[in-house]
Length: 431
Image (cartoon, rainbow, N blue to C red; front, side, top):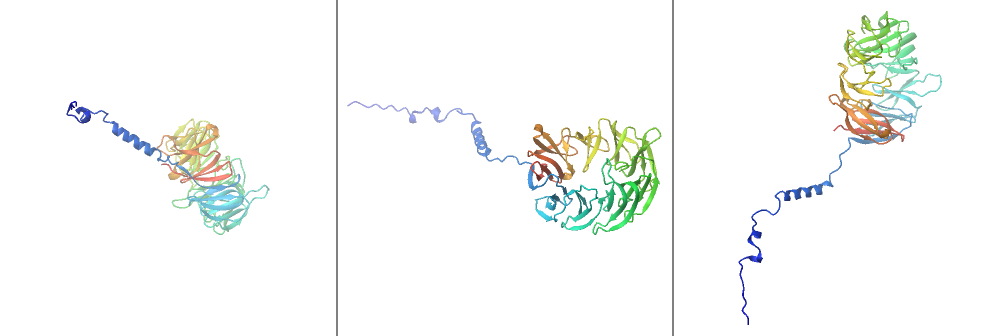
């Protein structure tokens, strides 16, 4: 029997002591944290929702290409589809009321709490006007002729319009009737012997506007809107009286007329009709109100004048015209009004927001912002943005679906027609 020899090395499992208690780390110190971060990222990446679009569809309507619509100050969308007038809540699309079937109107004109409707007509007969309550949709009254309202006044006037190259509605002829908005009855009548331009002018203090008639016999007359009586009148220079001349701007009545050596612009006090000043018109052929100033447009660009003195305040030779959208003013650099330059300050003529490539949307956006659209990819996509004073460029909201066309803006809402015969209401948020 052979002897068994056992050699005791004094170590368990045959591992050297440095394996049990190594003198330094065998892995980098950052590895566990990195592995943990990678694991968390892997587990959460699939659960993160994509960013929500600032545009969301509220509701949509089927409309015809000639159907008209309007938005009220109290949050209604009034849409006439195939002759049926319907009111929807702009917030959620809830139906408020429907008015009976009628002849389709070519325009819905809002005046306080009523909507004025005139039907399409192809004959020589002048269509009448129907008043509908925006609260109930009930017909209130109907009367012949065209019923209009004056800026700054709640008075309704029934007139016979004379069409001109500048449009209709402000050049009138025959009787002018003040209309009771509740009953439609005539309150007073002013006779226009031939034709005249109809305007509203600022009142005195807190009084309402008054009616200004510029007769073709060179008589300028101010009428009280409560009674129709003439308050003051005077003769003015012969001029091309039309819906764009004269213009009320900055509390003055401004008339462009021929002068001794060229065209001149004269200013008249709206209370006394006293001539305040006269300055050369230069190459300017159009006068527009821009803020508290008056802006003159012509071959030498756009310049602003002080309505109280006639002094030039600023000039921009590369601009062509200025258009007001809500509380904002946009300068254009082309005669067609399709190439906006930017949002401008009418007091200084300074550009506030560049709008190159964008087109303003009619209406007033949220908190006075200006909504914009821009066609891209050959017209297949339409982007939407908003411009505000203080921003150097528009803030992009999102892209509208393909086939979206004409749009109008309301606070927190964008209403657009589509090529598929729909009227779509989107809600938007600026983030």
